[in-house]
Image 1 (tube, each protein chain N blue to C red):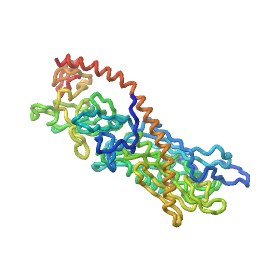
Image 2: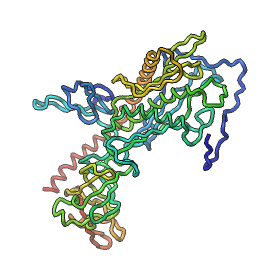
Image 3: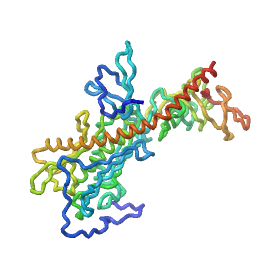
Image 4: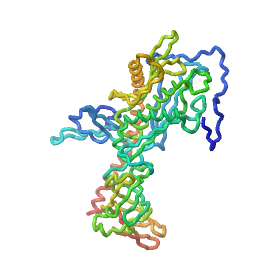
Length: 190
Length: 311
């Protein structure tokens, strides 16, 4: 890989002929890098004559943004929402967070269909590990997350008896030891 | 010094072992040229548990005889964050940057307390202004970052062997702050926080030389000079901007010249900063790319399987 490493403040080219991507900024009509990392130039075509310049962060994504898929644990529930603490970023938790980010999943964001019939208690229990996507930066405390997609929802859950459960349908987990079934918003295994 | 009742306190005042130097020991002299910076050692990524970290050292000149060898400067910096705002903090659309500068208790000839004193808080404030102009805060909504600096060995204020009761006239603080700015810049870039440029600190001073003439020197070691005025800047070279300036003493009419010299000193420190950051980034990118190949391989294997399950 012969990608060039750029440092913060390094000029990347005039802003008239380049499009700033993540990791760059414009100052005095020029594009500058704002991170230390490898520089990537998108390919140009007739419709997009100017390349987009992106500087990748070697440490990867650091905080949740709108659209990020996250993994987290349910910390408490009430009839209107479930509290989540985001522990890792990325669909399979590629980037573990050093500190957990507080988030909430509102009742209307739990599933995509029949949203007025959803009950939080039949979707999440405290301790469940949930895959969700960030829909907004939220209020001053919490990010807002959603599980309204097939591949989002509970990925790991423990039964009332304390045993690890396996998903058996889109809304049920099975405790194989006792045979008990519990209701959850189950994430489709990928 | 404020006594800390929860810990076993070392005696206040100096605890350096007695050095029986002969009476004719001359104070250390500057051996490098007036426009020459001391050698800098800088390395990033030294604390694995922090998001970003760096270590800065001005090693003592090995050419000086051991008895007159002055202490060197040793600074570590760790950056924690970006992380979620603390519970009690109000909403902030920008990155909340906080800086802490602390001398280790053994850093100077006079012992320092465990609690930050006013000069340490002062250094922290100066460092914060220097960094605030560099970090692009609006890219980190609802998050905070802490810059924690520990001075392991501080620069002495007076000539070696002089047992001044107070902390001296404070000329050494400028070199310490210049080091703090440079090392914090390296650690922030190591943490992956967006910056408009690398910021480096530089000091220049007006000193009396042997013939009592006043000359300008870059990177003064306080033990080697009789200082008249000193100036520190935090300088962004690619934008030609100064984010922080601190001047002490009586510079007379030549303020501009002194600032110019401090900028020149910061430019010299930047060359080391650029090398250190570039080295560590190259190492990280090189360490990242080999595992990338198997993972893309696995992804390409996983995709056809996915099609089978959905179809």
